[in-house]
Amino acid sequence: MACGTLLRGRGLDCNRISGGIKKIFFSVYSDGVTYAYDSAHPLEIDTIDWNSTTIFEYVMPLGVASITDTIVGSRENGTIYYTPTINIILNKLTKEDQNEIKLLGATKVRIFAQLNQTLTNGHDVFVALGMSNGMELNAGTMDTGAAWGDRNGYTLTFDGMEALPFAMLADYTTIPWDQAGFTNEAGTFPTVGS
Image 1 (cartoon, rainbow, N blue to C red):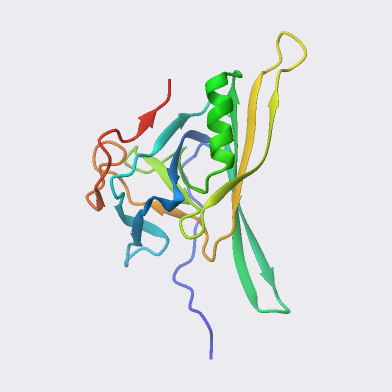
Image 2: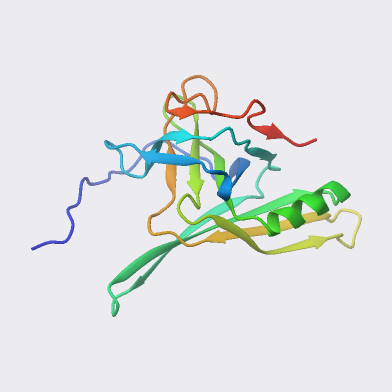
């Protein structure tokens, strides 16, 4: 007897897409956020109760942030899991960012990413990382650069370990985060840094 059933094939998509990430949103893992997957679309989250939690928005410079979800399997043990990783670059060293990065390093987070990829209706694709077990800041650098044209700023790597691949968020209605199943947002949602 088969252990699983395939649901569909995949043709060649005639649409062009764009890589990269526009924005990253951090939610503190321990803040009591609950979520549910869409029963008709596995790995799409259509319900989130934010529990009056704020998410924190980080706008990315073009072409500097990426997500990788690595599949890790063991034929011998019959196991499989996923290790989501997100790499981001923030330009310019500041005392405020120094403190925030210190706090990010001490906090387990869930990460939501607004991709450059769009749906057929023109809305941006959003993905969610670390929903079950959280993501942690486990590597990075703070660089001044050497030459005048060098970048100075931060390179940060967050990673996690999950039983499922990262999920996509259900499409928003008009603006991001207005999904009907998303409830109990904080008054400042999301909070954009200065």
